Image 1 (cartoon, rainbow, N blue to C red):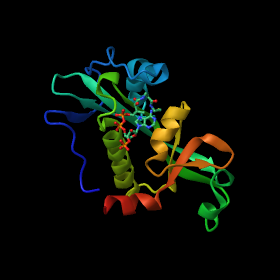
Image 2: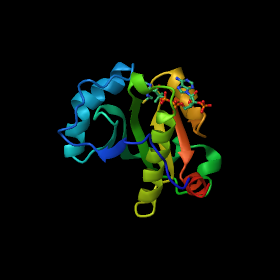
Image 3: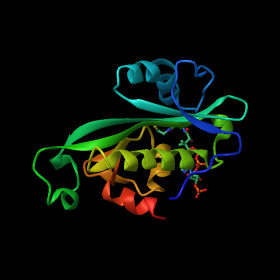
Image 4: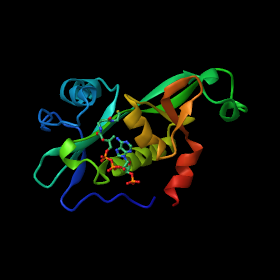
Length: 173
Ligand SMILES: CC(C)(COP(=O)(O)OP(=O)(O)OC[C@H]1O[C@@H](n2cnc3c(N)ncnc32)[C@H](O)[C@@H]1OP(=O)(O)O)[C@@H](O)C(=O)NCCC(=O)NCCS
């Protein structure tokens, strides 16, 4: 993945207080209210990091939020943790991703996801983690992520993962 191109005039920015979040509507209330009410505060407390996609008319067209966490080795697939210590293991978390309904089905979500994974890859060069994980809000979102090589964690059908080792391969394509 050499680079992700958004439509001409669109730009990706780190979330700032001045970004107009109120009108954002992805069609999924939890995704919208996180952006409107929690994303800025959470980022101010250094709990999460959010990037927003701004369209050519300065409207907020999409966003994603990343965080870090730990999961118990027993929550990850046995083939993945076979050679890892039996302890809590670091992971990157794609906590939220949404596209405004006006921009759905134009490849924006795919490009935001690719950008989020590139951010994860770049972070992994400095702060190691074993996988990227995310929780799906519904089966539609699950189908979207499964198109991009995410797989369910055993015993957690709505929690998906992608091994960190596979990020590197993706960056070379
Ligand atoms: C899920 C979401 C981010 C997809 O964004 P999008 O910009 O419409 O998606 P894209 O146009 O990039 O689609 C990429 C691929 O996924 C497919 N896809 C998109 N939405 C899908 C869905 N709901 N179910 C199944 N497949 C879907 C597209 O057909 C496309 O496949 P293709 O490349 O073979 O054509 C967007 O619908 C959204 O914001 N939904 C509400 C919020 C949400 O559920 N977020 C995820 C949970 S945190």
